[in-house]
Image 1: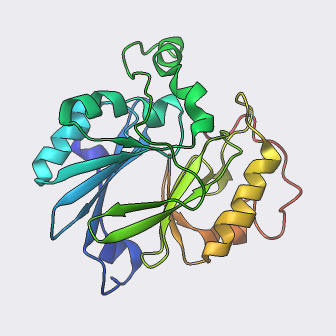
Image 2: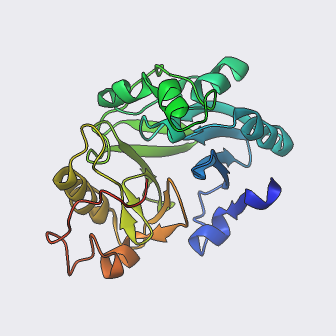
Length: 247
């Protein structure tokens, strides 16, 4: 499955490495939905975090082992089955806390196993209660690098985005995609809240902010403001609910 794993050193990811940066990143697409699980680690301490390990925990842990890094925490952007489904298994195997998302997504995390069964993939993931919920303004740390948290409802009510301004890097889950936005036809989804989360919380972070979405390729906020058909500067306010789009 190595062909499905994308290697990204932050030097190449950002164009130039900030002097403080010692981080590296590997994206591991998992589950039949090819969800972007991110393994982020500090090159000096080899401490790591997993962002959205949605499934295939054994495969994820094989990558962790091959790199010789030590996972300290699991961070979740939201509670959907393909983002949170592998968190419980990994927590039990390596004894690390699961942090996030916002508590408003617990109802999703209570039905992960049931939801995978409905998709025809029984056993793909487990229900999870995080060790800690996240809220707007919280701070997360990886070694000496701090990440901030934004509560970004719309796709789900408890969705969060995790970002670092200096690295110009954001883990946006299913809020935003290259050329699209998250669906809002799920229970407790809200299209206007999603648009507000993107335009009022993400755009102020700057046009050169790179983002890792839950599915598909990376992008920049600036590029999305130019040509995203749902949230570009030319069309914001005219978008219709994305009831049949990306996850």
